Amino acid sequence: MNTASKLTLAALALTVLATAAAQAQVNNANITATATVQQPINVSTGQSLNFGNVFPGVAKTIATTDATAGRWDVTGQASTLVNLSLTLPINLQSGLNLLPIANFTGSYNTANNAAAATPFPVAGASTSLSGTGALFVWVGGQVNPASNQPAGVYTASVTLTVTY
Amino acid sequence: MTPRRLGIVLGVLAAAGTHPAAGQNAATISADAVVVTVGMTIATLSQLNFGSVPKGVATAVAPNQAAAGEWQVTGNANAFVNISFTLPTQLTNIQAQPGSTMPIAFSATSALWRRATNSPAGATTFNPSVGTVGRLGPPANPNMYIWIGGTVTPAAAAKPGIYQGTIIVSLSY
Image (cartoon, rainbow over all chains, first blue to last red; front, side):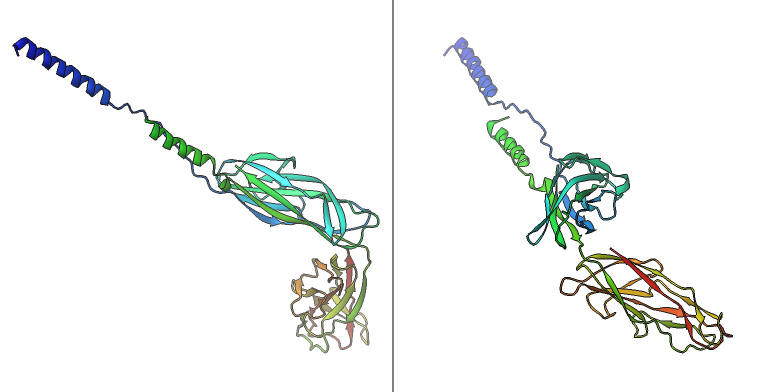
């Protein structure tokens, strides 16, 4: 092989190597995957909604600011938006006897202070947990005993569901 | 990014998006009411009796002692009952020395109430000067019992004789 041919082959070899190097090059593009681990929501029973004594034919209302209003205590991720949802009964029950309940009212506060709480529609609402992850939710309502309402202890369940 | 790496990242994101259980919680409370259709009756079962008291020496009767005053209330089963008292501040000599008096006082633990069972052991203590909310027993025994004690303080110069006063208990649903 003459000198010119050797140079041509060397140049070609370099070209091939260069091409091969270009084909093996890896392109990296990074993104950041971020996850914030939140405190689980915990809803606990504060106290029952207690109407006490009621009399036939006389409606009785418990406001959210009354001492016997129902209350839940919520904890979770600090300063985080949560959705409140209530599951409400239409009757209290004593054996086979029913006592209608209606006109529910709700309120919430980041402190355990019903008097300073914010009213919300019982169809649902959103609010934020406190800086320490606390929220208190109250419920009131009205029972409407019939004029011939039988005596007895009437009860039903009221459920609060909280979601992020 | 290679398809495999992209797939892993998407898998991580998908896993994070399908983890709602920790983001939701619920709790149930009860709503309760007692329908009342029956009135109340009250009967005095025993007087508050201090017995003989020495001059200048305070004598106390606790509400769980046999000498305590006691009432029995009967009414609507399970109903809540507001209890209040009209308390004397002194007893009056009703015998030879009319007009002589003896101080009587009641403390924060001078009264008891209990549902259904006529025994002060296990009853709830309350301040008769403040009153409280008691509760009648269940249908099989729709009663409530109330006891009251107190302390008399006869002066060193107290005149002999029988001293009496009146304690009134008032109840309402």
